[in-house]
Amino acid sequence: MVEGHRYFFNPRSYQGPLVFFGDALDVFKHCLKGSDVFSLKAILPWADKNPERLEKILVALGKLEMIDLGEKFSHELSIDRLLKKQRRMMVWMQLTDVCNLRCPYCYIHKKPTSMDIELGKKLISKIVNDSANAGFEEVVFKLAGGEPTLCWEQGRTLIDWAEKKFSDSEVRVKFHIITNATLLPDSLLKYLVMGKLGISVSLDGVGIWHDQQRFYAGGRGSFLDVEKNLDTLLAHGIRPPILTTVTSSNLRGITKLAEYCWHRDLSFRFSLYREVTSSTLELKHDNEEIIRELLHCYSWMEDNLPLERDL
Image 1 (spheres, helix red, strand yellow):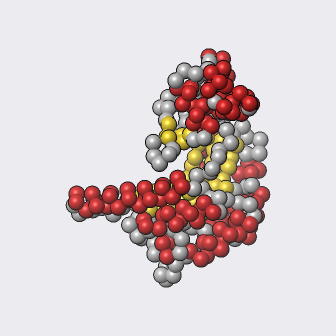
Image 2 (spheres, rainbow, N blue to C red):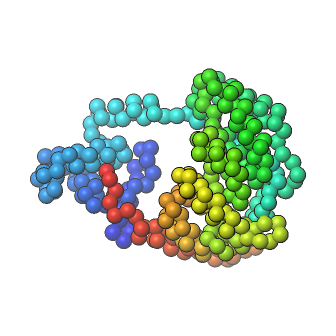
Image 3 (cartoon, rainbow, N blue to C red):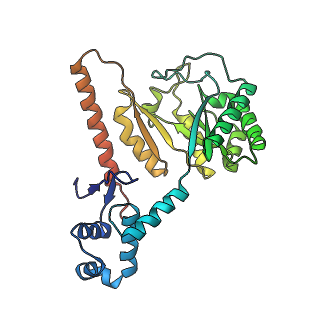
């Protein structure tokens, strides 16, 4: 229990850690004690007056596999999960090694090279055919780099070709671009709006927290350009997941970034990067600082949880 919230995890379920509070927590606690529906209606003042909500909470807890609603429910849940399960293959396609940024932690050597279109077509055909033979239902090609928007015309050509080539394929073929969002060509935005392409954006912080590690070759920070293009995406109803590389340079700005994303209804993910330390003492100090800042960020997120989750 942390500051009024309880975290639960069933290692045998398909769910991750869960947070229960309010009516859902009350129902779950009594279920753990062995209370049945009739007992819950007698114990919980609201349950007898609102049986529909009680049923809704119980069904939700059952689907989360936190309570056992009987063999029939479990069997139907297994069948439903099997029917909804998608066998998906994710494929990373390096369109280019060219990039307009010079992020210190980047492992890609900046070379003036890009993927040959015909090679890209052969690669896509091979993967889709092999995926079909292996029973996959969907293949998602992630266009990456370098900075893939610098080779967007090649990417667009592959998307258009694949759309015609695999229009009758038993395997769904999708594309997704991972970009630093400093560039947003009109045709790329059009493809996003049309649903021909998904997008993720690399953003390492707000303002200086981003600029000090994601800057142009000339040294100028890129945040303002990224924010402008993010605003354009949001104006068109596109909410890209935010990918953040956390280093010692932007560590203290991650809470501000979480708040920035929260206000824009953007999901975000932190990936930790650390230089090789020279001693165990230095490593210990780095670990302590990372833990401290992450806990501060998680505390902010906890304080801004929705007041009520509709179970």
